[in-house]
Length: 293
Image (tube, rainbow, N blue to C red; front, side, top):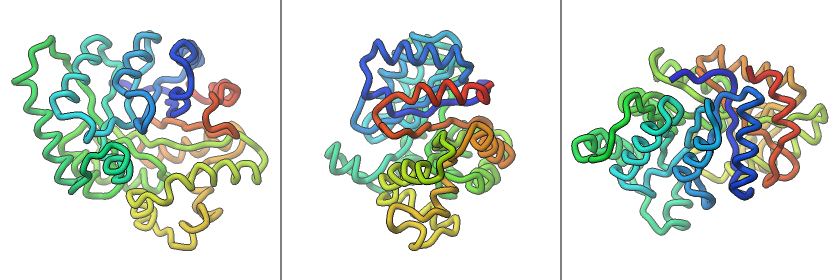
């Protein structure tokens, strides 16, 4: 699979009717964006929404960033991946991951337990499903693992086609590339605020960060990178904020993208943040299209 240009990572589609989602993704494709990445929380089901996005576009890669493996048994995930890849060859990326205990235990009523072991066993079982799958199989499927720490990145290197990383600075991209090796895909998400106003950039960025700084998966990773309690408290220090959320004009955003690429990223997907976290940031997406090709 060739992931070209820039990608867009968005959660805002969940708050729009399907007809608006179709029209928007068609515009993003026409603007030159190479991929669209959608997550899974308590909104639209990501495999179904991937089908909606694929059917509305002609060339764009559609990726789950990421589908929650606890929510589907390995055969269901295998079948979903092969269904979409066979129907849209070379255009679907299955990103999957273990999510977070709060979303698994409290929201879904499932049991989050031993995530490293669960991932290894899940991917092994998925690989065995080809013997049971009765529909038309797909070739050249692409599977990425949500990975932050060294042990999960090693699993991504051994049992997946690469890793999708989230809420990471370029120095993490460099470390991830060293673990993955040169032959695996590495696609980091990068949050951005398109503004020349530092106060606004920090305000929007801090509101974004506060949702993640209570989640151990992320805080452990940030501590490994050298950030301390002083950085993680009070919705993030300015040092942490500037490392994780790129703000500024198009040139500033392009510089951060280049830093990830120089550190080893194959593709970067931008999560554009704005004052309305549910609204579509169409003006910003249109402006950033100048650096998307």
